[in-house]
Amino acid sequence: MSAEKKSKRQERREKMHQREVRSRLFTIGIITVVAAVLVFLVVWPQIRPIADVVAVESTPRANAERNTAGDPNAPIKIEEFADFQCPFCERFHQETEPLLMQYYVETGKVQFVYRSMGNFVSQNIGGARTESQDAALAAYCAADQGKFWEMQDTLFANVLGEDVGSFTDRRLSAIAEKAGLDMNEFNACYSSGKYEEQVQQDFKDGTAAGVNGTPGFIVSYTVNGEMRTQLIEGAQPFSEFQVKLEAILTEISAQ
Image (cartoon, rainbow, N blue to C red):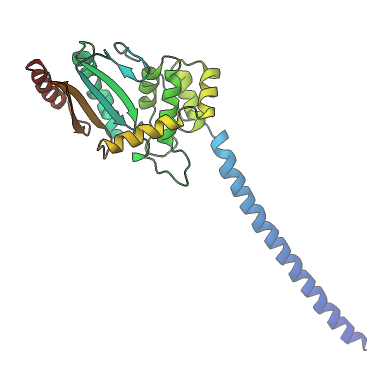
């Protein structure tokens, strides 16, 4: 075989080898980039700066006991089914709830109960807990320290938007600290998922009662030994609640 033919064969082998090397390097590069992206997606939520968390001055609720306020023997009971990410729930919390507390809860006419309605804002994917459920879980953990209402106020004050990281684990921890919680006790409760079942039960009870959006309110009272209920839907103004509650009180007093 002539030297010229050997040279051409060798040249072809070298070109093939170079192509194989380039192909391997390209594949390795793609794998490296994909791995880096996956690592970033896992690590970034844990290291990114936490958006500013503000403290608020929480207004004491009358006869507060965990997630309830008011006399347990009050003639009327209102159960609010809400979502900490819901803008209409936030509006009710800011505009109507304080007046209900002042004129009906503090006067012994109404017992008020806050319950979670978890999934109306957050979408539950693959069974994973949502931001809304996590916020409710954090609020119930705060109740263990007698600070449910302080945590509720602080959660609503720190909503960034719907499913944009308002209530990541790290941010909930920062919110709990602003609410004045013992962080060792809070973290142990929250990380254990202690109140997951209660959060799920709230959702089931609200759905069974006909709540189809947040906030929804189940108003219950007894007339002549018969339990009666009314559903109030949406962030209604105080005047709407006032009309219904005064009518109920009149109905109760007439029995």
